Image (cartoon, rainbow, N blue to C red; front, side, top):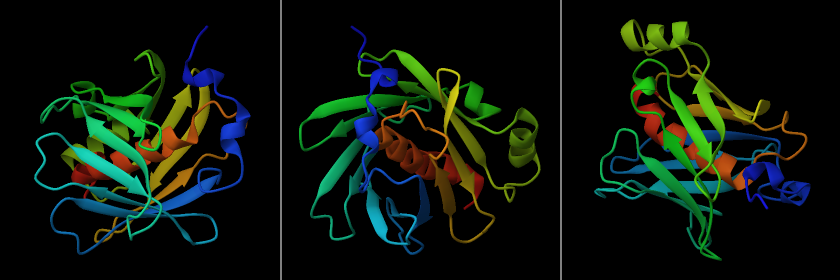
Length: 207
């Protein structure tokens, strides 16, 4: 029996921290070492706080329930050291259960950013990619002031959009899961993907 993400029941979309349709991600402005992000729910409340550990050879991000970091909700760890096409495992620290993984398509991302969504067996079940090749090349070759937009799909079904707001000083991202009406994507993996996109792709997007 398949354990892919497409088989996940709709119970994962129950109301609560991971059950919102829309979020806003904001990079902490005065964070010098590592990276830190606040993730707000639709009501403007802090739903998550994410912090990247500084000076780590393997990138290591944690997602907490708040800035006090008392409750750790997700861990995102690279499998290899300083790998441009790294695979990041997403784990529930409360149970130690791996939820899936996100893999950056290294050479393809030189022209247009693309990530693969993997299930617990490392089978590809979806992808997250930059809006278009033309806009991606404009960002890389002409100006990084054009906000990035990503679309995520599981199979052929859209499950999320990730839209960077135009702001050259503070990185802000609108994250929208409202099109995922059938609950194809584990929302925890979707939140982890958004944090990774902010942390990794945000370096080139100039936010």
